[in-house]
Image: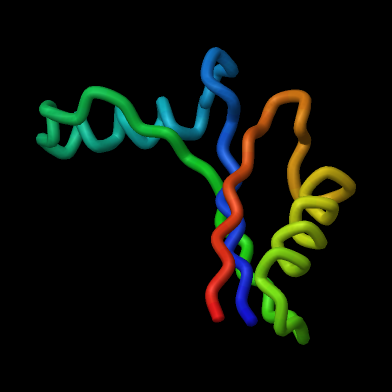
Length: 80
């Protein structure tokens, strides 16, 4: 089973990397880009057969290690 975790800064937290990418895109002629948010994706291969159990374990990983929940949100997708 595979878990895909997307971690992004919470709305309202300055995304300086996203702003740098947005400015670089504008500099390269992509003026129609209104906003850019940069995050990270973590792919975890697991020896699990139950999706609910896998998601619960990955959520615990996020809370403990993978995300800084003070400033970041995360989404978990479980794939069989």
